[in-house]
Image 1: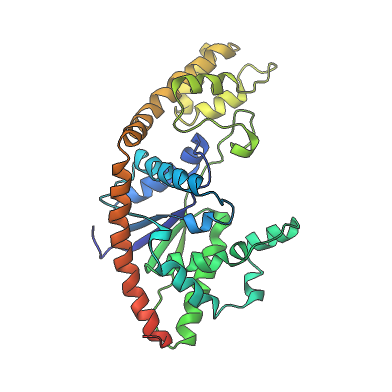
Image 2: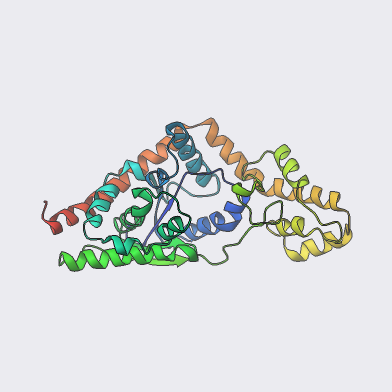
Amino acid sequence: MNDSKPVLVSGVKPTGDLHIGNYFGAMRQFVELIQTGKYRPFIFVADYHALNTMQNAEEMKRRTHELVMAYLAVGLDPKEVVFFKQSDVPAHTELCWIFDTITTMPYLMRAHAFKDAEAKNREINVGTFNYPMLMAADILLYDAAVVPVGADQKQHIEIARDTAEKFNRVFKTEVFKLPEPYIMPDVAVVPGTDGQKMSKSYGNVIPLFATRDELVKCVMGIVTDSSGERPKNVYAIHTLVRSERELGKMYDEHRGNYKMLKELLIEDLDRYLAPIRAKYEELTDDPGIVEEVLTRGKREACAVSEAKMEQVRRAIGVA
């Protein structure tokens, strides 16, 4: 791995079953960005962030393992990516505490997630209130140049930049570099089987690693409007795997025959997803691969983060 390249950092919470909306909406673009070879990528499973909503040890272990398998299956190369668990690198929580000591409560009360929780009158745990500081630590530990985020997450990077500037100013140092957000282009909102945004909470998903039988069940359950010649929801999902030029001819040829159009969608989805599914099943059969990837990632991430923490400790006077 080329250490001279700008660093890219991204964390993914292990909190849900992946579906094709996750893949076509963002995962594919993210993997393609990594595959350009422009960056030195650090990708981590944000298991400590996940603790805000998931307090079940077995589920945490299972979902962490599945998330790593998923990203390997969709094309991340562990030889080119430092892939690790947040909890395996103690520097994340150590640096978070240090940032806590220079951050005011009124500042954190402006964070979108806190304001959203407050507006819904939820009891807010300290982790939810404080998670922007852990996120800042996640990013700044590795001298990230870019952090891929959706447009709605840009504030997280602004908070990390503010924190870096404040630390450097308070302790009269230049320990931290200022990261830039990378707003991924072409991040799509993928429709679900009912026409709403695909989301597990709506029960309208097509699982990313669905078997052919599961695909048949999901696609045949897509809601259609009998008044139209082209089933809008079927067509919208079909555009994920075929060009609109190809689909125009196909949908004209089978105008009004919704069953046939769904069957064609099943064939195209199955063909597209089959290599990803096969890779995932291969990893399921050999769980040692995931452990090996995480062990190697832990070693590299700890080496980089500990070097940064030595600078931090000297700057604050504890070393």
